[in-house]
Image (cartoon, rainbow, N blue to C red; front, top):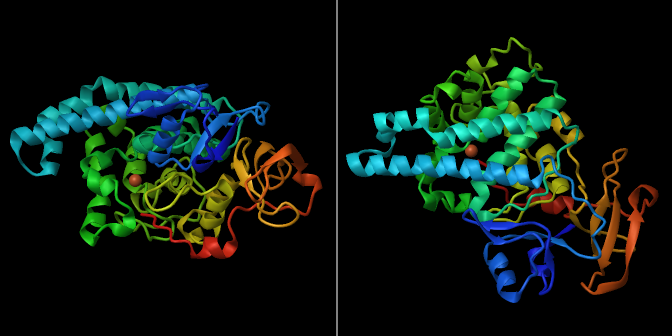
Length: 408
Ligand SMILES: [Fe+2]
């Protein structure tokens, strides 16, 4: 299997991954693409699609969590968000009051307390946690972010990455559990934000609209305090409140600063600064945002996102946690598409066949297309650990430095 840019899709190609629209399967894995499907995929705004073909049959894509677990998570989170939104809307129609007043309505508080959809999220989170604790892989998600499912997929991806990083940092089980509940629900407050604001590029929003968008972390906190299974986990609620606080104090809602100290079991930093679990969440949340398609730019590759985080936003993150994150990030996961930037094969396109755990910048690659996008008669396999003339980087440093990046 391999990932290819959506503009390279051709009739007859076979899907390597299922595509859903609003929870319904639009294209199953193994489906053969027709022109109307290709048009639809491009119309959905996907920059990349996973396909299965003879050139990539031997490539096993790596993922922190398997596709089935990912799909299940997307489904349960979607259900919880949708049910919550429906209840809030029905209360708002009944009482015709301020949006936030609905959060204190007894109908809403009892919904949050007893909702089967919320309980399903809690049960799923435990399952996911167990899987990640028992696995040994690094961070590679390789899931194509579908635009309409972005918040739900994002919640699962952020949770899976946060737990993998938490495991690397050797957090005790209790902290990992709190991290899991906090990350899976970190954006729940977004259901109170008008769709129009969520769907617009940040650069086009007015000051007031950005201020409203920024309230989602505190709205999420207010919602979750009504569910005792979550509110008793103060560290989980803190993750929701602080998931946009940055280490250097440039985040929101309070502009808290992080501590240089590593975490300790008796951590009380959440009382005065950013909690260690929120610091972990900020890193994986930013990485997931950069590597997802957004309204104002296509998804960045892992290596470009890592460059931006370490060079342009370095101060926003706890340095030791960011180092640990980069250590376990599989920068060139099998199946990722690549383009050769310089040298003999400049402009050639291909895919990663195998990662190299000794040197993560030098995977084995396979080239399929030349610089004119003509298919090669025979694909070329190159082991970059034995070939110094090729260095992979999709964009130039100048481009990465000047690229417009809007992060909340
Ligand atoms: Fe958020």
